[in-house]
Image (cartoon, rainbow, N blue to C red; front, side, top):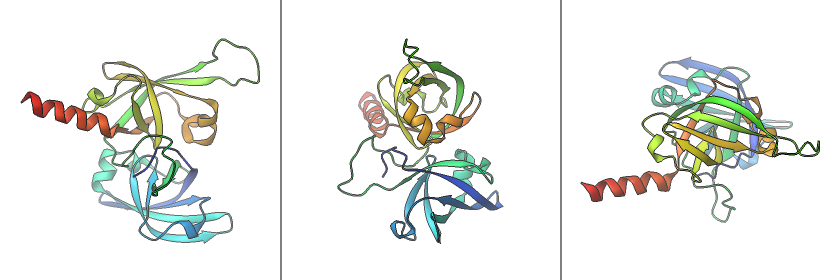
Length: 211
């Protein structure tokens, strides 16, 4: 389990394999002593297993394997050398749950339709503008997205501002734009989406009662 609070931004060093399996090496600033072989790490959304760990002076390099299902249903298949990834290590008992419960099981891929700056009505230079993103959700999961609910996009826990059919919006504050890959995101970019776990089960329960 994860919280959707990004704790580091890593970068892809190499990708090997074919359409059946990719071995991906990722550089990060995590202390290698804090990553056990076989540990789960959320990499821009998908929960992937660390299959090798190499210490470095300023962190470590860890390797993950992504199988055909992951390559087909997420953006992992498009990762290349230099791709930057939002990283989060798995939640431990006693850790602060500052975002929302995230499994790392991606439901599909959303697309950014519009990115716009929101100044909040002030021209004071000390207040950096936030950015609003309008995204299109896959039709299979759009019904699970609710206004003021939670959604995980590329491993980041966010609050849904508005919903209109398969379109929904989120607001990114300057801090989040600076410490995640969101500052780099542009119109047309594709993002891994995981809908709120509670919303999914609530919908399933409602369907069961109605049948």
